Length: 90
Figure 1 (tube, rainbow, N blue to C red):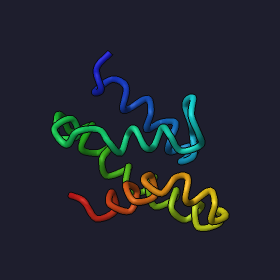
Figure 2 (cartoon, rainbow, N blue to C red):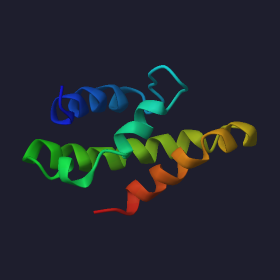
Figure 3 (cartoon, rainbow, N blue to C red):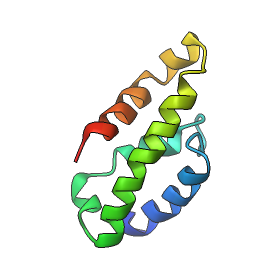
């Protein structure tokens, strides 16, 4: 399946729980969605709308991540950086 079909499914999960996960760790689904190439997000009006919703998901994730202990934050530091970048990207 292509990303244009998988991303909306993933976003439905992330809107419910920004820490939704696949097989690795809580938040790994968000990590993968944050790494979707920009051209995918620009592919349709639906995808552009989901890109805007991703900012809200990233913000909720970061708010909850503030409550985590430092050891866990170190484990997901790349995810935290990507979530912060999502808040400032176009």
